[in-house]
Length: 142
Image (cartoon, rainbow, N blue to C red):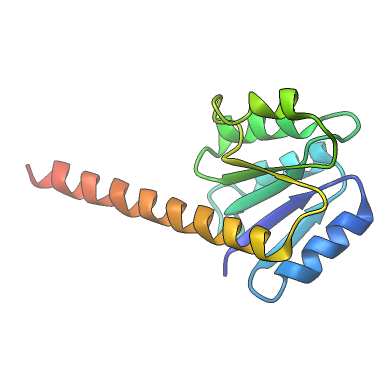
């Protein structure tokens, strides 16, 4: 089952996202970015590794940009979504061209939109993985 990591310092947001997604995905949530980063490091190359992260942008101690930047370095295959409840477009705009996040969603979100985005990102990740396997197979046969 696909494993999604949710990170937000607001328990209500974590509860709402979990309710929306738990039927279709395995959900793990943290209200602290540094704890989430530790969990990612601990789960790398295991059956429990995360496929996708949805992180709030504004959190104490470590913001979503910093968290996703770390993840991009240690687990670049993980799909990354920023969730913003503020008018932080200047801050958010750098995240996409710098490959920190693939998409930015705003709070409050539309349930259909968030599910659609997740499905598309997971499908894209799957296609990239298949493409890499095909390339490796072709390289080894040449």
